[in-house]
Image 1 (cartoon, helix red, strand yellow):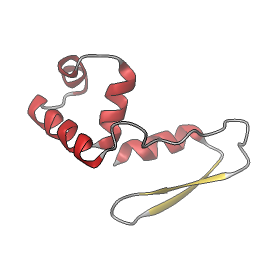
Image 2: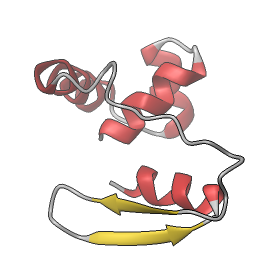
Image 3: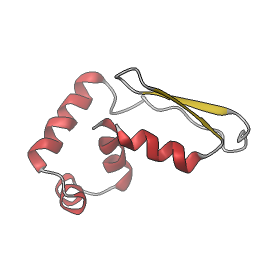
Length: 84
């Protein structure tokens, strides 16, 4: 849900337009949005990834404890982040 909030934020669209475009129930989205504010993840929860350092691996750790290590594929990394 937090990945969807981040995606909406980067899209520059209204919440209503984003929900309609992505098939998300508006009430659900607003719930997610309120939760993201409570957790403090709506801003500052991201880190910069240096694209020049493609030889280094990045590890994604989901809240349920699952860890996935990704070597130099930022597209795959983006997809994995959006899964949760």
